[in-house]
Amino acid sequence: MSLASKLLNLVRVLVMVLVPALAFLSVTLGSPVALGRSKRPQQPPAPAVKDQKSAAVKGQKTAPAPAPRHDLSGTWEPANGPSEGIQPDGVKAMPNDGKPEHQLPYTPYGLQTYKSHHALFGPDENLPEFNNDPRDKCEPLGFPRMNFYNLRETQILQNEYKVAILYEYGTAWRIIWTDGRELPKMVDGGVAVGGETKEPRYYGYSVGKWVDDTTLVVQTVGMMGEERVWLDTAGRPISDQVRVEERLHRVDHDHLDWTVTINDPKMYTKPWVAMDKFPMKLEDPHRDVMEQYCSPSEMENYNKTFAHPASAPAGQAPQR
Amino acid sequence: MRSKVMAEVVLAVGMVTLTFPLLAHHGTAAFENDKKITVKGTVTEWLWSNPHCLLQFDVKGDDGKVVHWVGETQNPVSMTNVGWSKAAIKSGDEVTVTILQVKNGLPLGRVVSVALPNGKTLLSGEGESREVREKLEREAREARPN
Image (cartoon, rainbow over all chains, first blue to last red; front, top):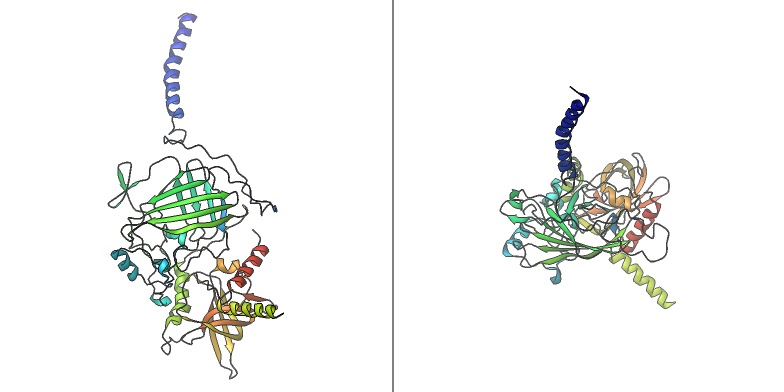
């Protein structure tokens, strides 16, 4: 074989091997899947890295800087003091304090469900031993109750696909998708996602949309039903039919307002606002958030050592 | 002068009546909220736990009889927010405890304050005005590292 023939054969082999290989690589590496990119429509990406220090942390006495665009990230705490988000009497905007203006628009079933809840707080409060709050069995609080019980230091992390809210209580977190996907539809037994029925979740299925430069509106559906969760610590009910709307509005660089509207036709005759522009302020980004947890063994010890004897009628106290 | 005296009276009444129950875990059904008593005793355990921390201590009566008390506070996060810690109280500490006793008369209650052997007094904010609690929270925040 002549040298020319050998070279020609080599070229043929290279073409046979390299062309399909290059074609394969261009299809796979170039695809959104291979690159870890979603095919979903993208919203404009958030600006890369932000200054998360508040004016107070920087020692500045000037007014806070304007809110950055499409950015909620930071460590936040209730602006009016660390106890403001405990909400023992029920949701902040409508506490269960017996005042007529705080009466919720119950359906008959909603009222019946409320009456079946023996809460430790409110006008119908019970002694510790006689409450049936799922919280006291260390069940997950679920959403939206996470916003209405011990809302304390709250970390918000985000990227171009999602916003993650990390709650202090229960070391629990939620994901809010901002990648353009649609909110799942509520169906019997859960929600419909891509033609499949997906199970209800304690923290639901959340989708967020920026309605302006500084306001993220979040819709959440697909939560657990009334047999598993309560709305608040005053025993108000919530059902699997609830749709929750949150508006997270970054007022300026150092402040965030959080509004929550409950729309649950099974329990309430009309939508109502449970948290109305609840103010949060930006903390030092170096802040190391504590744990607040429910431990069944610690709960058992507390009940045995304190709650049960404290609940006993006078004269019938257990011997210790 | 008169207005200053009146202001002090109003403030004092306010401090007494506008108490700010924290109650992260349970309500007041078991408590006489206005009945504070003060006892001296020896700490047997300071349990830093959820849903409430528990202070257990023995109080020796004039007759020599020892009564075992259990006082609850709020949870570790809330107590940290008013300047308490797991390490602040030790077994064996001689303490003076002010407590809101439960209605049924058992030696149980909600801890208002603990005077420690080192002369420092820890205030829980229970049974106090909102202003007192907020002051405690501000001071604790300033003293707390990240």
